[in-house]
Every structure is written in C-alpha cells, then in structure tokens.
Length: 284
Image 1 (cartoon, rainbow, N blue to C red):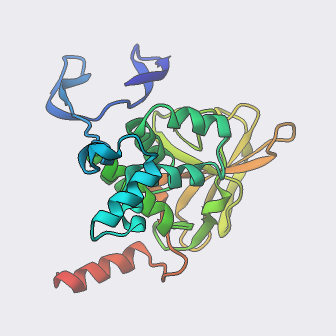
Image 2: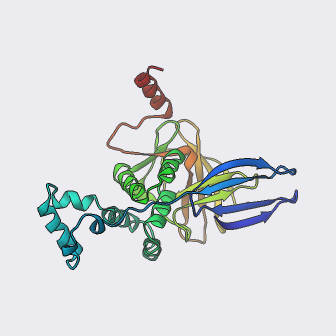
Image 3: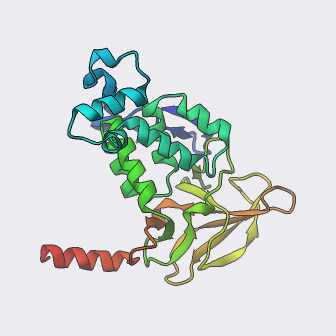
C-alpha cells in the first residue's frame, strides 16, 4: 500500500489516504484500546500465464517472428490464425492500450504498459468507469490474464454511463477525461472523513445543480464545486467543478457508488427493474 496523503486530526488521530498495490485477504480483525482497528492479512499471489510460445509452439519455431510462428502453428492445428491471435493476452493488452490512448496522455499510458501486465490490469480496473461491485469482481480475479480478458470484454460492451438508481443516461464513455497525473479516477476525502471514489468526465446530461459553487475544501485547487443530482430520481451522482482561470473551464466528478456502465444498444434498466428480473428468474 502506498500512502498518498496523511492529515493530523483535531482529536489526535491521523487520516490516511492510500493506494492499494497488492491484493490481500484479511485473516483476523482486532481493535486496540483506543478503538484503532488492526489485524493480520495474507498477501495473495498474482498469477500470470506463461507465454503462448513457451507452452505450445514447437521449439523449431523459436527463431521465427511471433506473427509468422503463430500462422505456422495454426496450420498444424484445427484452430484458425484469428482464433489463436485473439486468445493471446498480448491481443487484449494491445486492444486495451488503443482504448486508453483515446483519453489518456500518451506518456502516462506508455509508462503503465512498461510496468507489466499485472500493474496494467490493476490500473485499468481503477480507471474504468464501472460501479464498485464490478470493480471488486475484477480485483478478486487471481489471474492477471483473465482479469485483462474481462476488462477487454467490459470495454467492448459498454459505451454509456447511467444513474445506478434509475438508469437515466448521464454521459458517453467518450467524454471521460483525465485531470490528474494518476489518471481519470481517484479517491477523495471530504472534511467529514467520507471517501469518495471519483472519475472525471467533460460533460453530463440529465442532472440538476444543488446549491451555489463553493471553493471550500475543493479537491481540485482553483476549482469551485457544485453538487449535482440525477434529474429523474434525485440521486446524488457527483459534482461539477468550475474555474474562470484554469483549463478545462469545467468538468464533472462522478462518484462510483451512484453510477454504472451500460450498453446503449440494449435496454437500460434501473436497480429496481434488475431486482424484479432476478426475483422472476429465481422465483423469489
């Protein structure tokens, strides 16, 4: 775990903002006399599948270029070259990289790619505009290759962001932007100690502003914030940040707990409708 920020509280405690770097499982939970929680954890192993060429392609193909050796191997099996190609982890990495280049700084994407498949899979999971349930499912996957495959599937499947409560359209995936060096997603703590997991977009629709712009305790120095709610159901979905001096002049921070990704080609349902469908399927 990497500590990003620490603050001394008035009651003598310390508030810490940190970024997870390794999956772990909590084994025991305890509380100290002062109420501070602590416990034991076990660091979970990260599994990366061996390269396709090391497992299946004959040693006699070792001196060939990867693309050529894959074609030769396809000719020796019942699988087509295309099927073999899209089954490789490298294929998923290349396709995810194309998607990332769409709205992230080139140098940042290159830097993340250079850290290896596992680091890339975690960074993508952190920056995809998905709800917390889907994000946790990705992080629970012990195999890097399968996690990348699942992320590629999500990227291909979703193109809009909707209100988690009622399904109202909020924005398109193409409107994601990065306003920090870490990417388009980060955790922010308000004065009450509540942690908000935000990702940033250039514009949203179907929201209403509540209150007047305020610069107090702004997570983005130089910007004023205004609370925004879903215009259909009133659910708090995030904030609009505005500035008269900085670029961009305005952007939105959406909180993950109030949104979910969706496929515009399919009917968009609300949380209540999805529960009703589940009840019908399982005869609840």
